[in-house]
Image (cartoon, rainbow, N blue to C red):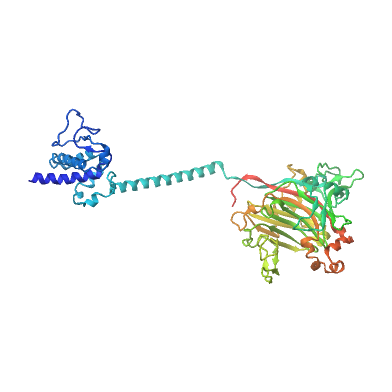
Length: 572
């Protein structure tokens, strides 16, 4: 009776195991198979505790259709095998594992059917597809271990990559960037000055609407409104005679207190053929009257494109007076304002204070310019019309470079101004001055200086200008803006600022002389009320060809463009 009860119990257990662990084909517990015993001639009987299994000869198709008969047959045979093990639990586990191809740890942990599975309900035993193995705690722990191992390997890989990058940085060093000393890349003086530009020929742009006709190089030469003139050197311009070390830097060879000779291939100081007086070249650009009314004028557009640089203008006279609108600036007209505009020197009518203006698309503001980095002031905007026609009388600093900012004047941009007397008639009365723009996106700024009169030019800059013709010789002096004092204008650009540096790119230098137009013409009545009363309009004043037009000219000693050399360096 006990054996019958035990057999029934084992049959239930075997049924559970067969139900849940047969996965691919009907496996019989006697016969021979891939798991057959080592003695293939001795087929185990149903009453012996053996480890061999075999195919029952049933078709796989029938088994996969869920044949209960084969399940029951295999359960009965497995129960008899277990019965023959005489309650040897270890041997029973081995039989189960070998017969049904069950992982050993599942037997150890009492996976479905053995021990704890005896009380399982039929619904629990039938859960999931018939031929899919049940997930166990052991499987979960194994999966968790695998995930931990994968994460650990990933972290280890990241650490190795980081270490290799650090090692490569130490071995290779920092990246190469334009952060070294300044090197002269363009020298514009004397006879070679105009070789750096093309003469624009035609009407002024639709945006400026100047009352001028720009002429080509040949016409400008015939009209004598663009030429190079040699004049006696005025050694008092910089407040001292050219003697000693400075005379050697400039290329002079003093003998017995006088200048003996000078060799210069690019139009620097030279000795006249008659007499011993030394001369230096100056570039002149002016205007001439026409019968039609608009004056002939000159607009030079640089051949070289820039994305950074130190731009220096040694100026002795600039166009000034009512109706004038001269400018020296950087831009990329076909891609304006996407590639930006920087006005380095710009005069309107009788204005007397220098200013630097930036013009861009959106997302370039100067609210983050630190204190104590400049001497100038922000330009302001007030009286700007609103969309509804009202006038905005609030006073706002022009810190947004966006040309269409609704709270600033159209195309005002962000503007900083210098003290009075730095452009126009006061500048000309002082003999001109030196204008400098430093555009350095790597060091994240644009700066502007004006030094007028020339006696105010810092020693380093003065020697750099005087030795520019010496090129790479040992006597050449490189400009170092760090020694010049604070600029009057400072704009923050680049990484970490409110103005990405790509707002300014691919720009070239431009000199032009406009008259009247959308700025000087619109301000003519306000800036020149007596002339406006007399002539009625700015254009009528130009047509009158008064003697004041004699002051409408550029006199330039030279333009000098430097760029920083490339070096491996970390930028703060």
